[in-house]
Structure formats: C-alpha cells, structure tokens
Length: 394
View: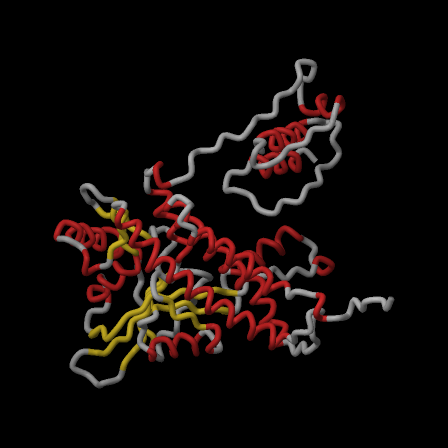
C-alpha cells in the first residue's frame, strides 16, 4: 500500500475559514427558535464580538503578511491572496446573515414581547422630549464635533469607537462639501433606555448624535450622516530579547493597539457614497474591507438589551453549579489532593474551587511557583488578584 503524503493540500482545512464556520454555529444559536428570545439576542451579540476579534488579530495578521510580501502557500494549498479573498466572501455573506437575523427575526419578535429598539421617527412626544433633554445634558458636554479642512486634519479614531460622519455644506457659501466627524466617548451607553409605560424601549446612541447634529454644526447644512466604526490591528508585537522591561513593553503595546492600522470599516448601508469613499481613503482600506451594514454598526452592544431587560421568561433558567465539598478530614484543597485526585467538570462544577486553590497557593509559603494559562478573565478575577498577591510576596 502506498504511503499517503502528508503534503497533500486535500488533507488540510484552512484555519481561518474553519474558525468562520465555528462562528457561524454561534449565529445559528441566535437563529434557533428553540432558544429563549433574549438568549438568541445574546448569541447574535457574541457572534459579532467574535468577529471583531477575528479582524483585530487574524485578518490583521494576514493583511500584514501580504503587505510584507509573503507569497508561499499554506498547507491547505491557498496563497495568502486566495485566503484573503475566501475570507472576504465568507465574512460579507456572514455579516449579511447577522443583520437579516436582527432585522427580520429578533427585532420584530422582541417588539411583540414589549421590548422595542426604536428609530427617531417612531418616538412619541414624551420620548422625544426625553431625548432633547438627554442631548442637552449629556451630549453637549461630552461630544466634540470636528470639521475636516486644511486647518483641521481627520481626527484619530481609536479601535472600535462609535463615530458619526456628516457631509456638511456651509450656508450661503459654495457648493463644496466638508466632512464632519464626531467620536462618541465610551462613557456613554450605546443604547439609551427611554421612559415608557407597558414596554421596555431603547434607542441607539448614534441616532441621538445625528438628531443633535444641528446644534453641533451651526453655520452648516447637514447633507447626510452615517454611523461608522473602524476595527484596527490589535496584535501585540513584543521583542522580548530586546526589552529590558517586559511589563513596560506590554503596557506600551496595549496602548498602541488602540491606534493600530485599520483593517475594517463598518458603515450604515444607506451612507452617502461620498462619505464612504472619504472614510475608506482616510483609513487606507481596500473595498473588500468596507462593510455596509443594514443596522447598528456595533452589534456587540445589543448585549446591553439583554442586561437591562428583566424578563426571566425570555432567558435561560439560572444554573447553579455544584460546589466542591471537602471530606471531613481535609482542612483545605491541598490536603484533599493528598488523599485523592479531584476532577472538576465546568460549568457543571463551580469554578470557585479553582479560584480557592490558587488563592491557597498564593498564601502558602511552601509554594515556589504557580504556572497556569489564562485565556481570558473577568473584570474582577479572583485568580488574577491571587497572582498579584503572590507576586508581591516574591
């Protein structure tokens, strides 16, 4: 029997395309009518957040390799250009399905359940009075409108910041148009809760910025507006052998990540083509990197609807994981482990046992080192706090 060649491209699946299929399965959870409605919304948000990270790291790395002139094909036989084109085709189709899921499925069903995400033209008099007051109280203080001209260059837009672009024309002047840009601070909620009776109502913040534009751009006629968001290269580039202070190098790179090269532009589907081209050119993007979306440019923020909506009937029932119980003879987990092995199956077993184990190790003077891979942590991580405490005792 002839020995199979491990160099046969047919035996390999492209890693990036495989990951996109994984994320498609996340989107399918959002499309599954057997899941509770708000959980489906959460899955849609997760699929969008996942795609953000994919562009920040995987696509950014691919674009960088192409720019650096790499031409070799991968184990799957695809060149970098072919891989990029395949990713572009798959992602554009995927994004279309995301917004179709939101517009044609989730949003109408949420509305039927009394959870509404409203557009400006759908507001009643009370809601309109509220947003006028909100804009005066919040937006006047925090928003800084910029008009791009020879004296005012295009503002630096940080990674994934919500922005609104305006096509402006000076009143009683020429027919020349200018670009206005407003970057929305992260301190402001991307979905604003509206006062209502009998329903739970929200409005997207970018709609309020557009509503408030006339107050910000006095002396101009606003021809059109469009919300947009730029995704940037977020890879960390560390030369450890050249760095005397790794902590400082990491800190610097984390700061630089917010200003890395642009790899994607998301913009309203009905945005004026002139605005779209001005933005694309400014960020140095190719046409395949522009995504004209039929809905909010920041789908991950739909998670705010899930968080702010107290409807247990539209969510999974709370799950209580099983706590690890030590035998009567053991004072702590170390003693328990000396007697027998302990297998934890997450999420069915509580992660508290792992956190307690790390905390005990951090306090134990006989422990010389703690070695663990942290893939992702929460904002208030017991494990991270324990590691900080352990490092302080070094």
